[in-house]
Length: 241
Image 1: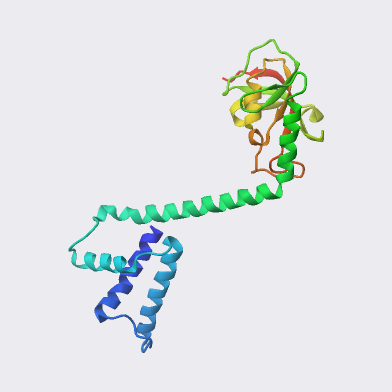
Image 2: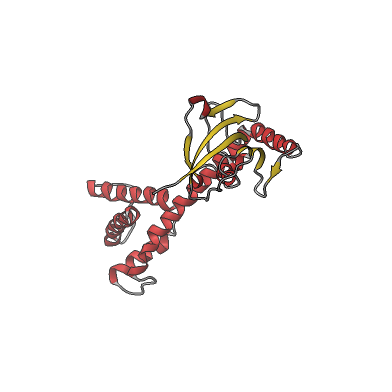
């Protein structure tokens, strides 16, 4: 609607131009001349900011055709193309900024990403390490005997999260308080891993950055593109009412 209002302003400006049957001269002789010219400038600046370059000749033609309701190339119902086009431009701009931001982040944390890839490549060759189709790696520290959770299950777990250098960044055991998690509401590596486990099991997961926080997360210890290691004990599947 905001863009459409700009076109109304444009129509008013062009109406003044049409009445004079000529564009403003280089000299502004009266207050209304200045106001008229200022409206034209304001319209052009805002339209370019919202839509980029437009075809001025077709813009004026559309205005004049609408005034006398003849030779219309579009119907009134087609005018929603304005807002749709403006929205697409905004989306394209957002996507471009996101792509540029991702490239910048990847350059800045390229070493973190490289170390994770190299660690996982070496780790997959170690005894007892299983690699899934997604790239998730795990070791069975203790097998369980109960049921396996589904994607919609809520589970009670104890866990310890580490960086690949062994530094602990989070642990439910340090608080002596199990964590309640919904299987489909955690990072991808957790979600996939939990569904491999039975109640009572304890696994160690080696999670590639794309199954962890990827490029979108940064904390004091976890940088973008960080591979993570989690030891998870599935204590029980919580029955919900």
